[in-house]
Length: 118
Image 1 (cartoon, rainbow, N blue to C red):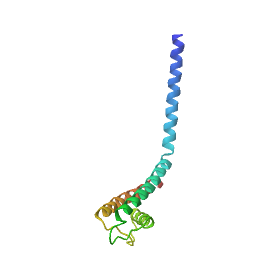
Image 2 (image 1 turned 90 degrees about the vertical axis):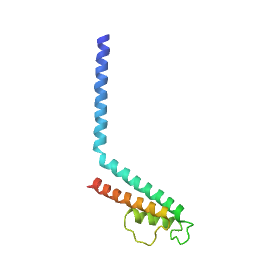
Image 3 (image 1 turned 60 degrees about the vertical axis):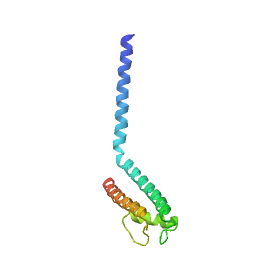
Image 4 (image 1 turned 180 degrees about the horizontal axis):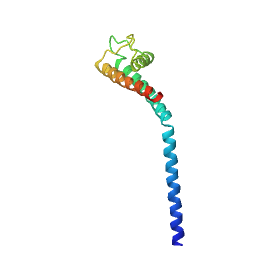
């Protein structure tokens, strides 16, 4: 009986190794698709939180030109894509720091998009 249980253990080990190999192969095969989904989700989250935060910082500031959620979302989108029309811009120091962070991460994100799609 002892030899039979050893044989069963060997078969289980071989099956586990095959399963790990199949999972590893599936992950490596779909790496580009997984990366693209992650980057799209990250970009959307960056736009959402950037819009909320810039609206919070600029909404009641005298002389500010970002007054509502639409303005904040438009400014965040234009900033992340590094288009920078200049129609909306932050007035506060904190808002400008948010702009620097969004510009820097936006450049990195679009470089990463290009690398994944190539």
